[in-house]
Length: 414
Image (cartoon, rainbow, N blue to C red; front, side, top):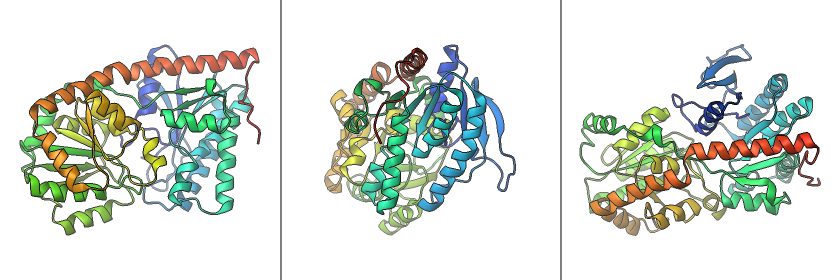
């Protein structure tokens, strides 16, 4: 169960698709219950079915866009939860694998597990409600209380939990959940998907006069509150003074896209050294990675955000063999830096950050070694096939323990 499932031809994270298709290759039958974001406006059809790389995907139209208010988002979460509960319960199966966000995915997942007397494995992609509380998105005692209840409800009804980062695992364990039942399976690297795109990358460069053979840094991700893409505007402004040939490209969309573009216009870098391409399907994103010299990952806000960061852009960069710069000192940034595959830029001193970035961009020897180190890191630690096998083991353990009567829920009180 994943409210925002996406295939490579769509905009969005493809983690569920990549893991799901590999589970199919391992001989399992996989069904995805998700929203149909490509449905026509006003569609009255409740569900449609398709098969994507062997995965049975059940789509229901629920309107959701990044610029929705939090009230509208919560409403969309509950509309999907109601429909998904009925659909998932009708599918049966051996185990329910529910991935958040949103945390409300636990409601239909638990309903389906109880109706079919099967276990649930819960995947924590983002720490709810800690992150929205830290950001001020949840502020009233009532909403915070409800969110904490929902978190406990999800954990209490999970036979196993999958966390995307070590820090997330620790937070889950600190809540009282058994450590032995939490497995870290981070976002992974689709090496084959990002390989062999040199010609496409070269063609992209030649098709844009503003790019050509110039050094290019790629940001690919959301443009929202936690991303702080305005940092890139300041970085591009300073880098232009150091090396006016350096280009910055932004692929993505979000609530702050308009304000960031306006900041770039006022700084005089919009359409000069900083270029916005909007949201693109992953197939196109992979071609832009091939065209890039370096990628950059950004986070703005309290420590809880960057301490648990496990961003798709980080793993895509490794898979594409591109060095990655991070403006935060979280675990993924530390992994890249210690492997010689990336940089950690100062999040405040953009003058120093720009100097560091440009110096490394123009260091051909460092760039070559960092790209190779990234690809090796992808192969050894983050290859998606390894993660699928690991997930398969987690699911099997949950099923076996549930069938033997040894475990049903975590036993957390509340």
